[in-house]
Amino acid sequence: MNQQNMEYQKAVQIIAELLMLDSDTKQKISTYIQSYGIGHFLDNLEAYDLPRETNQKFQALRIVLLKYAKYVQNLEPAEGGGDEQYE
Image (cartoon, rainbow, N blue to C red; front, side, top):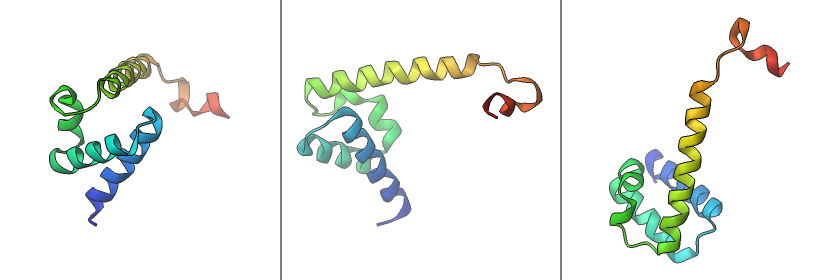
């Protein structure tokens, strides 16, 4: 198994655990990601033969991640590089 395939398998495992997917859905997602790549898969979720509940879970996850990304972008670094707040 090459490095990219190993990374895809890790991603599928995390997705399956996070969204509590059954083994059939996990296998479908794995096949889609192996064939088309993660980016294409996530950008075109509706095009794949996945259960409606799974699509809804992905949409909810997408909303959370987009909100988080916006939050992180709006954070201003603390003086001196920002690490002081964690010391």
